[in-house]
Image (cartoon, rainbow, N blue to C red; front, side, top):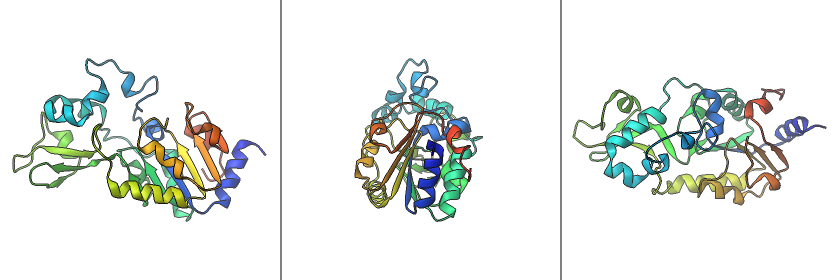
Length: 240
């Protein structure tokens, strides 16, 4: 039995699969990741992206923050790809307990996944810092300079910036799902962002699978490890 057949068999036998996904999942939707050679963090910039995407920089230089945010973080033309639709199809079959994602693009939900925890928030949710009115991402995309509410307050994306804590309820749900999973599939993440990456240590199930182009600290623990693109693996599965 080759590794693809092994993966096929594991998925068919599992009933509480949890997917832990990162930026690599959305690369095939033409959204760049962060840490690969072509990723956002390797692009030439006077100010490091990690600095621009920090809470303190947002407060001190909101104009510069929004310029970067519109250019590098919003992809209105992006559509779900094979990985998103594959995960959603498995959920529809009753095999998926949940999707825990570090992505902020909302493509898992657009593909049909209903049980999703967005650890780092979503570009689709934006809130006035003064009156707390909610807005879609169109208000950010279509505005220029600093987007403001009718009350005059700044509209802030509901994404978790550096120096900001993760939502407590999201963290608890993620940990609970991982503890309950019989199969944990790590997709498209280098597992370098904490505290999110540390949650996989709560996994007590039987099957740990890693599908990611670069090596991760979980590779040696995994029953199956594919150091390649997600599409290369999923296209070989019967239910792709």
